[in-house]
Image (cartoon, rainbow over the protein chains, first blue to last red):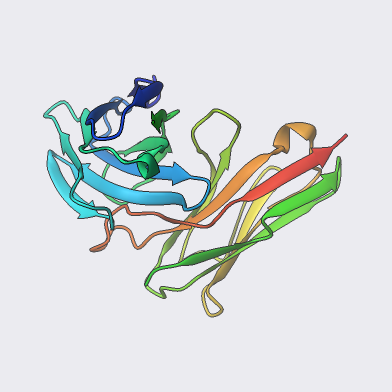
Length: 112
Length: 115
């Protein structure tokens, strides 16, 4: 089985721009979660989707949003980028809410 | 709020020695505790997990113990090898209750195994 696939792997954006990251979960997995990883704050939960519905949300500003499609693929969007948004964004998939989570390689976002 | 404290932040051992990483969680409702290994340039990889109805779980050279009363859990790696060198993260979750699959992570432990 293919693992969790995140695209793109690397991204450079300018302050004020917006960005969309994509995540394809493991086949058969219906839950997708997103995390932000930075050296200072570590791994922080952004949100979780199951069957196209957001089930849980972390403490991030409204500039961070996401969605899930009927095929379980998920996207997250960050609008009005700030320098502090530079991070590794990780997607994790699981068979259902609260089940074991498997992570992708992440998307490295750099905001300049 | 929910919090997971992880210690030590760095750990250096000789090949063949054992390594122990400890985590403490704040929310007594937490019931699922996975451990992840992250190598440079890669995403976290699940290495072992334990649920609150179990006190200990072992998988070859890796074991995890859970003390619900004290709200702490530990990762034990025996007979360490250079390929065990990585950053290890503990996490806690209240799945599958109202917090869903949200994982609260510790700050990470950078393990270095010297040949």
